Length: 442
Ligand SMILES: O=C(O)C(=O)CO
Image (cartoon, rainbow, N blue to C red; front, side):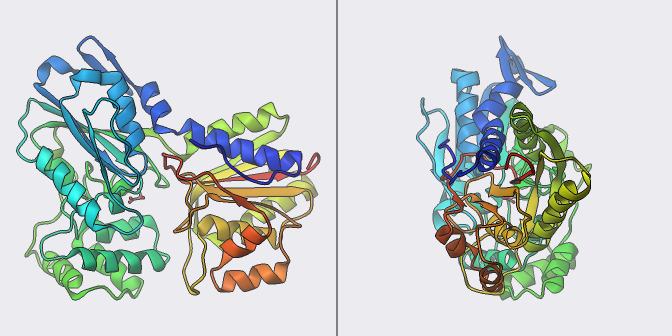
């Protein structure tokens, strides 16, 4: 992973960036997998579970998402020639060092034709397996788009249009994926259903607040708690205009004309285990250590912050103000950390993402002696090519900030201010990470 490139004019800016860097490094898939997966003779250990490899004739590695490549690299390093075959689909596939796991391209945030083609190869590999096959499945954020497998009767163009509408609606990921799971064959337990009766072990990097296995990557290896009715409800609640084929499929599913996704207790999950190997808290914990090493009192506010980005920003400003005024919930000098997934309801046609909007909204109100940084751990905020920004009370004029927010155009203002944090794709994906450095020494 490249280092974060950002302007760090004061030690507080530097602390903010170092906390973020450490947070992302702690959730790089190579590190996470090597810490949780090991092989001793014929015994494979994944987290606290062991698998006797003599029970299997074949070991396959499949899956994808933004951290898919790193998981595949690490599995090749741990398992070597015990892996028989594999297909992993990621946005920027790198050739496999030893060619055991095929790396194929897919796209994010909107699914692409090449992603559909790559996913077809994965589906072919896991169709028709027997109970002497072990499937290791890399389940990482972004796979809902990267690994597209449109359901019968839905074209790629219709899936793309539906994805666009969902992304612009401001809907949270649970709602978004309730729809995606019902217009796809691989999501909502579909991978587990296809692979049965093989044993499936999900290696999960969570980018979903609360680690709901049915939501991360739209839950290819997890029971689906949502229904066609829930998906229709999302379309209604967000007043979404989706292609007729999508609405027809959901209505037919709701009427019982199309089978539901597999639910909890379904026998397709009898041989499925999912392990969450890392999440946002893993990253915050590493960031907390850096803050403490630098002499700050660190506080993890929450790894589950969500809601409209500009509103969540005000809450973080309020926490900084309280810390400076009364020493609550922590006395300055302090580092307040949070994570989660904020959303943006798009009303303008500017450039930005949740973290950039978060930073811009915060910058307009931050007290002096406070530095705030917010990034998407995958290195690309929303549809932009930048991770996020680092701001203080002098970064922008409040009026300019409000104008830009009204157009959803945070990126140019923050670029002009020299406030961007850039890293390129980090090769991992948990949630958004935020650092507020408050008080003395800033
Ligand atoms: O659904 C996805 O792909 C997400 O990014 C959430 O895991």
